[in-house]
Length: 249
Image (cartoon, rainbow, N blue to C red):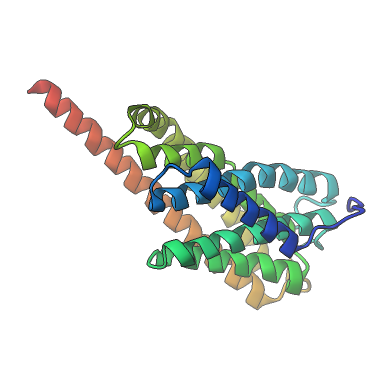
């Protein structure tokens, strides 16, 4: 059975919370950073505040309220809906950040819009299938702590030796972790989702337009994640080769 909550936070509540955290980061925590770095660092900060809690509450929502783990079209439970609302609040705030500070980052803006589309339709229109969406959320956010610390270090690596050292130390293990999660586990679960939907097991519960559009968004996101990490691996290999060449000279 779904967990009983005396108070169910709404999307505006979560949006206000993430807005407050963003402003706290921008005007206090990173106040001495440059304008663009402050904005990027503040986005990383709210990502940190969202990522790990999202993994924990999504895991709780699935383990404690999901009756049949093989049924990817089961009705959304109360706690699963709260996780969706929590993430919608975060993505709305981060979308606003990109529109204000990085309007030319069309890929990130589109990513946030289509992610919001999946969460909103699952929560408010379809009312089924949240368990699968939350598993994908867990896979997406489990790398959040490492990725955001790595990103923050990358902002300062040019002028702060400690940041450059941290960035160098974190890069290989982060790339390995990200590659396994987004390049192996993620695609395997997406394949499982595709087989489940195509089999017709969800037809009476999730409209075809919904699961087809979800799959398009999810597959595209996985593909972009793989391309992103491949580019980072290539950059790392180039840097290593350049350092080796300099030593030989």
